Amino acid sequence: MFKILLKKNRLNVNGLSYLQIPISFLPRTINDYHAEVVVAMNEKIKWRYPIKGVTESYSSTSDFSLKTKCRVKCEQDLVISLPGNPSINPEDVYSLELTNVPKDFEKILKNQTHKALNFIPIKNTLEDSTESLVFKASFHPLKPFKANVEMVVIKSTGGRWK
Image (tube, rainbow, N blue to C red; front, top):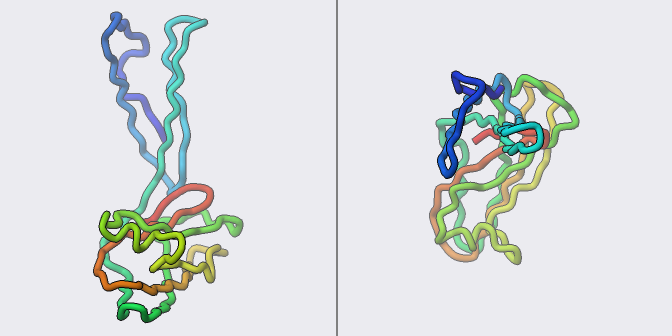
């Protein structure tokens, strides 16, 4: 999945200078990948650089909208299909996470004493690729606000859908 794009295998690097090592990442499935780049001066001196590649799939549509009055609870089931998920393992667990939350509303949505938005898993595992995940969204804001956020589905063995 990773490929070093240097044309030469051996390079001379002068003292106090820099060397950029270009690496391409071409995953074939949605998963997490790990590698290590080792730069060796000799048998005794080596530098190891870990690399983590996370494959993400993007949805271009605005899939879900939650709307309610202040201090009125709204609950809605979110049915999520995962395109590009070729390897279905019944032991994989999927979870939801909010990203790109505006700074003004971060405390409201992620407050530990009263979260305005909670996702309760109803069906967070898949048996085959035709099934969908189901989460119950519970939205109960204490004060009025309007925000667009991004939901990310995270597979326990690696991979993300935005």
